[in-house]
Image (cartoon, rainbow, N blue to C red; front, top):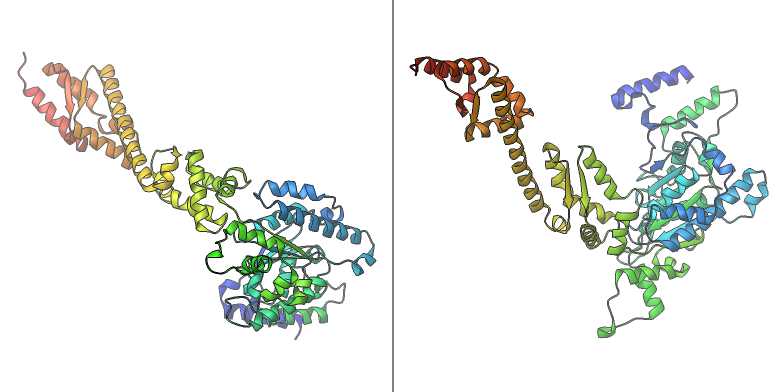
Amino acid sequence: MNKNDFDEFQKQLQKMFGGGLKGQNPMGFQSAGTPQEKPESEAEVSEPEEDSFEKIRTFDLKPKDIRDELNKYVIKQDEAKKVLSVAVCDHYNHVRRCLEGNDKLGDEYAKQNIIVLGPTGVGKTYLLKCIARLIGVPFVKADATKFSETGYIGKDVEDMVRDLAKAADGNVELAEYGIVYIDEIDKLANSGEGRGGKDVNGRGVQINLLKLMEESDVSLKSQNDMMGQMEFMMNMAGDKGAKKKNSINTRHILFIVSGAFSNLAERIQRRLSGPQIGFMAEKTSDEELSSYLKKVETSDLVDYGFEPEFVGRLPVRVACESLNAQDLEAVLCNSKGSILSQYGEDFAGYDISFDMTKLALSAIAEKAFKEKTGARGLMTALEGVFRNFKFELPSTSIKSFKVDEKTVSDPDETLKNLLESNKYLEQEELIKEIEAYAKSFSDDHGVELEFSDDAVSLLTELSEKNNKSISSICSEKFKDYPYGLKLIAEKGNIKKFTISKDAVIDPDKELSNWVVKGFQTPES
């Protein structure tokens, strides 16, 4: 099959698979070094800056530089920030020296792959995203539960490495210095408590990860990607010039894994304190339990269900602390990019702002803490407070509101009172507009207008419905009244007219009735 035949075959496949493949190769294939909009796997990727490679070549960050940057975004986790900062600096200082030409360094250097333990929502992922962004390297986040041993059911672990190339916009050389982050690694444990026996697939994935975490060449073409393999053969047959790099070496890729490791803290507690039975056993708080993760040993991880060789590839271990209500309040108030600022931006899109009291912040943090999902609980708590506000307020004239402790405890009642208060204020403003129009009419034409209650109600309703001012509605409806009423006034010596609901509904008919009656009135 020559190149033209191959191109025609691609076109036929595109027709078979439908228009969704327009503009891309069938089956999601991507050539080596060719950018693609989305990675083949379900991994989350972060693209580096254009000068990222130069930043790696000239890496000069100190551990405290990284720690200080992390402090802007993540609350607490001081020990985790310290450990991660040191490990990352050691790794990229080594990379820099290798790029300077000392190839022997690679043979004698034990890569500092990292395992991060800690409950959900404490900032594990956010820490690593911030580090990758600061250094300027490609970053891929994947979920361990998406992978299978063979790659036929689920994803192949090598897909993560391929995704680094895509995150690097096809720059394979840059991808070889990226960061791969695998979350929920604890789900690969094959004999953890409550897991219902051996998980053969989890063990197989661990074994497949071993070679990646040290050094391996990963082909840019997945063995399950038929179109990729075919194009690879065509390129090999037809490209007589300089060949593109078709694999990624993982020697300098930093692997970081993390998980909540449920029940592991209790195991470590039993190991350190011995079993407690009966009334002597005391309930341990979540905060106390998470502190036991700091004392994790290789034997604990092996007993939990990991292969010893797999644990050995993760020499750097760090445990994140659980977050209490005070910590969550600090996340709201002090964290750069806090979820609270996101809600502020949501309202700002409608030119609405809100002020939140200190007690309200504390109440939000308490509600979030009860969710037991760490900082993720903040969005749940805030959404419960603001959901109906975001639905109702954009359609009103309200441009600011206050969030206090009562708003957090009963948002619907607070919103109801806010809307009623605003409606009353709007009515007052509209009545003032009507009075201003009547005064202006009297000053200009020497005729006094008085609006009945039902006329006021109808005018305010029309103002709200049509989004027009009272002045514009009155000027439009009563455009013929200056001459007509002045004529009637002069004929019948009438100086005051009452504008009723009927006059608002059909002003011309009401004016005609007045004219007829006015000229029937005998002169005094």
